[in-house]
Each structure stands twice: as structure tokens, then as C-alpha cells.
Image (tube, rainbow, N blue to C red; front, side, top):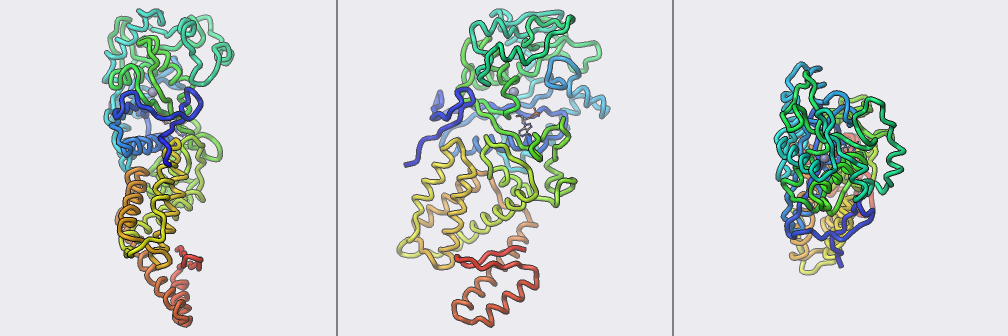
Amino acid sequence: MTKELQIYNTLTRKKEVFEPINAPLVGMYVCGPTVYSDVHLGNCRTFISFDLIYRYLSHLGYNVRYVRNITDAGHLEGDRDEGDDKFAKKAKLEQLEPMEIVQKYTLGFHDVMRIFNTLSPSIEPTATGHISEQIEMIKEIISNGYAYEKEGTVYFDVEKYSKEYNYGQLTNRKLEDLLEGTRVLGGQDEKKGRLDFALWIKAKAETLMQWPSPWGWGFPGWHIECSAMSTKYLGETFDIHGGGMDLQATHHSNEIAQSQACNHTVPVKYWMHTNMLTVNGVRMSKSAGNGFLPGELFTGNHPLLERGYSPMVVRFFMAQSHYRSTLDFSNEALQASEKGFQKLMKAGETLNKLITNAESTVNIKELKEKCYTAMNDDFNSPILIAHLFDAVRIINLINDGSEKINQSDLDELKSIYNTFVFDVLGFKKEDSESTSNDLTGELIDMVLNLRLDAKKNKDFATSDKIRDALTEKGVKIKDTKDGFDWEL
Ligand code: AMP
Ligand code: ZN
């Protein structure tokens, strides 16, 4: 029996049955990119993971409103409350307007998301488009007594909030431990408490992006945009909030605090966090300088890459690890993914040519159950892929006559294959270059099937002749118990 969908909730640190607040409606908010530079492959991992989650929830029949913001203001260097704005710094460097930076990298981000075949979110709100909502929320937090103004900057009062709520709930840490881990305030610091963070930041004369507010000219802090925009589009309490694990301790803990201090409700039912893409065990990040750009991966133009890989091969590489596990980049893993992806695509074509029988010798119902069980277990895509490889094996056995399938089972098998490979995992067939690769592959398959027939007829002279001719052309042939395998 397929179990109902279970989601690992970071807030409770366990898997829970997914019960939407207002089924069949589901509200999902994911922290989007800070558009001051190109997205790297690590960022893509998080967005591709949530694309898979969005696709599966939609497949289950939920009507998902997926909100993924664009951070185009307020994100300071080092994710702290002081220092330069990331956009202003880049604007100076590239001699552009901050909004030119935002436009350039937003378009680049959309291009990358399209290349990876991710679905567009339902709403993609920007921080600069929601300044008044953020100001209103800050006003409410002040009037509820959880924030204070100092010289045109507004801070959230973490200690005051902690008297009624649990500030460390998302990371399961006590306030005292969090305080211990934070640096001591300098004499000139305006904050009352060490953990206090800015909701609104006073602009300097030279600040490029600033807006009027009840506290003077300034700009919003990074965290308030997500609280304001998620409340606006999904309500005071919504179903799923996601982002990378690196956002959990500060950005998401602050989001919970702001929303609770404003609305007096728990903002999110299920918190979901994706684990990091690493390079030699080190988290891929802009600051560590170990980030590949997707374009470098496609062309192979990077010192760590032996060659290029297609977007769907990269997507396959990502889907082969669970979203809560770290994923370490390697050439070997990508090469294995390439083979895996091609095998899956090839099986799809074979599937379309299968011939039916009066009776079936294969268990398609069991295969279907297994696929749903894998995805219902906290979106376990690597297990799903393992089951799809069982499907590939079944398809090849039917194709070579070792197994039989009747019409209704074949219809079911096609439906499972198309649902999980294309709709849920989000793969697509690749362009003309791979079409010619596909044709080459099909021709090799055809010749090797002729060789198999020759062997069955004990015509070893022909079978050896075919093998030698293909070997000469660089095709490595392996005889297997199901027939054959080959690679170029
Ligand atoms: P940023 O543009 O830095 O605000 O990040 C956008 C998203 O990418 C956030 O959800 C981050 O948590 C996520 N992210 C950043 N680095 C990585 C990484 N190495 N692996 C996976 N996700 C990441
Ligand atoms: Zn956010």
C-alpha cells in the first residue's frame, strides 16, 4: 500500500504526514536568489530541488501557489547589518546603476532556470516592489513592542521576543547558547542586544538605493522582505517554506521572529531545507570562489572539468541524490549521470515500440507502487530513479522477447514512465546534437540486436564480424545476461 506523503520538517526534526492547511490549496515560499551576480551550480541545486517538490505536489493534485522572491535590495555584504549593499558594491565595480545589475542577473537567472527545465513560480515578487509592505510590517512590530528605533535604524529586539517565543526553535538551540556564539557589542553599537538585527537601515548620503520611511530615508533589512512578501501572498500561516540549509540559523530564524512578532501566529507549518552542493567537501559559494557557473559546466570550460555536460545530465546528477544529503561535485559522478540519463531516454524510445501479448509476465502495479512510495517518503528521488532503472530493465526484457506485456499493462508502464521521468523529475529530451547521438545509439542497438540474433542461430562468424566492425569504430561492447551493453 502506498503511504501518504511525508515531509521532513526542520522545525520538528522529524518526518510528518503532509496535511495542507487548506487542501487542495498549498502555499509554498522559497527564498530566491540575490541578483548581484550569476547564480552558481550550488544555488541551482536548491532551486532544482524545489522544482521537483513543486512538480510532485502538483502531480498529486494539489493546487500549489509557489512564491519565490528575487532579492534586489537590502542584502549587505557578509549577510550582516553593516557594510556595503551587495548591489551598490557591484554597481560601482561594473559602473552601472544598481537596477542594471538587478536586471542583468535576474535575466541570467531566468535563462539558467529555463535551461534546467524548471517551472516558473506562480509569483516572483521583488524586495524593491514591496517597500511599503515591509514598512507597514516594521511599524506593526514596533507597535507590538518587539522593535526599537535608533538614529533612523530599526532593530528587532530578540531578547524581548524570546520572553514569549523560542528564538532558536528552528536550529534547536537555547538563547544562551546563541548569545555565547555571537561577538560582544562594541561601544559604538546602537543595538540593545547582541542578537538584535536590523529591520530598516538608515541610508548614508551616498547610498544608491534608498526610500522614505517614518524613520527617515533608508532601506529594508534583508530578512523582512521574505516575511512581508510571504504574508502578503500566502497569508499569516502557510504550508511550506524552503531554502538552503545555510539560511536556517539566521535568515529563517529571523523570518519566524518577525512574522510572529507582527501577526502573533506561527508563520509556517513545514520548513524544508536543502543540503549543500560541495566541491571536494567544501560548500560551493561565491565567497569561497569555488562556484562553477552553469555555462562553464555545459561547455567544460573550467579547470576542474574534464569536459562539458548537458543541462539534463546535470539535472540527473542532482536528482540522484536526496535533497537533504550533501552532493559533492565530481567528473566521475557526472559521467555516470550521463550514462544513466542516456539509458533512461533510450528506454523511453524502446517503450514506444514494444509489441503487446495476450498475457503479461511483468508486474507493473508493483513498479508503480514503488515509485509513489519513494516520492512519498520525503521526495526520495534517488530511490525513484533506482525503480525507474528497474523499469528500463523490464522494457529491455520485453523488447528482446524474454518477458511479455499486455495492452493495459503497456499503457500503465508508459504512463508511469512519462509521469515520473518527465512530469515529476522534470527531464526533457535534449536538442539536435543529442538527437544525432540518439540516432547513432539506435543504429548501434539495431546492429547489436542483429548480432544477438546471429548468436542465437549459432552463426558465430557473422556475430564476430559485427563485433569486430563495431570495435574498430570505437564501440566498446559488453555481453550481459539481458543481452548487451555498449559505450562509445
Ligand atoms: P543567495 O543568492 O546567496 O541568496 O542564495 C540563493 C539560494 O541558494 C539560497 O536558498 C541558498 O541557501 C542556496 N545556496 C547557496 N549556496 C548553495 C550550495 N552550495 N548548495 C546548495 N544551495 C545553495
Ligand atoms: Zn528569504
